[in-house]
Image 1 (cartoon, rainbow, N blue to C red):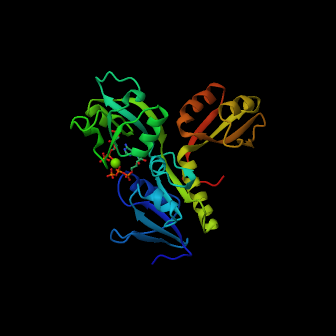
Image 2 (image 1 turned 135 degrees about the vertical axis):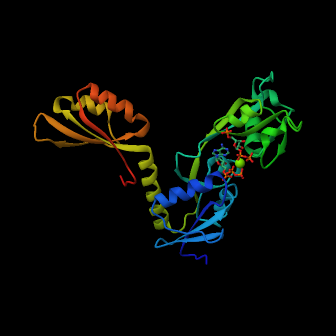
Image 3 (image 1 turned 120 degrees about the horizontal axis):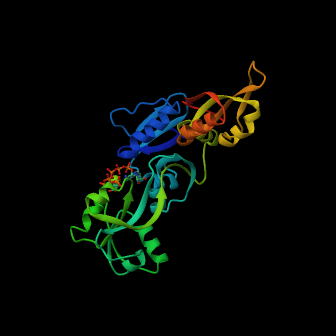
Length: 286
Ligand SMILES: Nc1ncnc2c1ncn2[C@@H]1O[C@H](COP(=O)(O)OP(=O)(O)OP(=O)(O)O)[C@@H](O)[C@H]1O
Ligand SMILES: O=P(O)(O)OC[C@H]1O[C@H](OP(=O)(O)OP(=O)(O)O)[C@H](O)[C@@H]1O
Ligand SMILES: [Mg+2]
């Protein structure tokens, strides 16, 4: 089934990044079907084979060359110490890795954890961070349910991923110090193979990521106000400006970050724009 002429892309077989990776690939126009929870799926018409793997094995398997590329968390790449290239950030699966302690603990910094017991699924990152603080701790390495370990008497503190903070709150824990911010990434073996296919895949996925982040905003504006409008909506490169029948007016088409659209629309209206529309992008190539 697996073939050397096909680029092997490792994607999570289960867990929270599994649907996220499948959605990204589908939106990028890749057509594939995983048969009966099989390990492989062939992408039709694209010389790419998908390999379904555990999210935390993907960095190591990519560094070893078992897969050419992979979708995983940047936290897991760091923990594995995998020698891979980061090709893309997806802007999703965002989370933080942090030292956490009981709400009522008097500890004020990670350096004070010297000599204490710390439960974590990230022993390497934890050890390196503590070393920079001049501290060493007894690390208890676990695969999950790390927040329970203080109540179980296994640890004085934990290092775990935090997204909304609700797991911490439920276990009466608080963040002591953040180690870093992470997200879902596309990685590639450091000696890339099948570059043309890899680049086409990256281009397609970038189209999806940009389309998810940006809207197309269109509005009419008096020509005398163009430079003011350009300050509000500078665009990705520069806005597209078209003439209207009334020579004093023009129409502008411009990419705007979704998070900024509503504010930009208010500001455009305030300087005299009319017919201001936001349009959703499905996909793009810039
Ligand atoms: N709230 C979160 N908790 C844990 N990981 C998160 C969170 N938000 C994003 N992530 C990312 O998801 C990765 C874990 O993905 P995985 O596919 O293993 O899902 P999972 O649901 O944690 O699976 P498992 O059942 O093994 O715990 C993390 O390494 C991190 O990059
Ligand atoms: O800040 P929050 O939004 O609450 O998310 C963080 C929690 O989610 C993850 O656990 P997961 O669901 O993967 O369970 P696990 O402990 O079995 O890995 C992570 O390990 C934290 O426990
Ligand atoms: Mg988990």
